Image: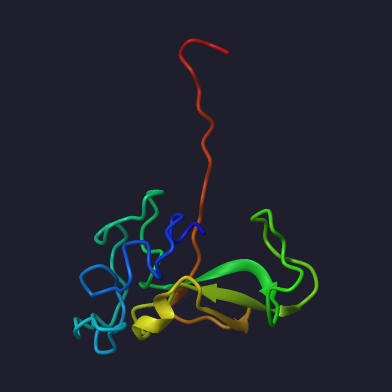
Length: 140
């Protein structure tokens, strides 16, 4: 939901992606898109457009570790947006979003992979999110 920013298309900017919008292996385009660049490395955050929530690189660049433990399907998953940390296989965590190393299909937010939580790759990472409280100059 956050990656696509409430859109119904496969990507937050539409039905397909190009290497001008996402960092992935452009030799493997999505759908009818044409081949594009294969940068062979991560790119700086902010060079591609953000989604409507202001989040960058929700598709491509690096696979993102999720807090959820691996489950084979969504049966019994929380419906309130919280992480699914019970049941399943706690040795495996979810990766989402694809990376510079992968083809375009892996960049869909619906695509998820399971990997052992102790393995590291240079195309896997995690996102740090922070909420800063709003302080009014006029008091409360």
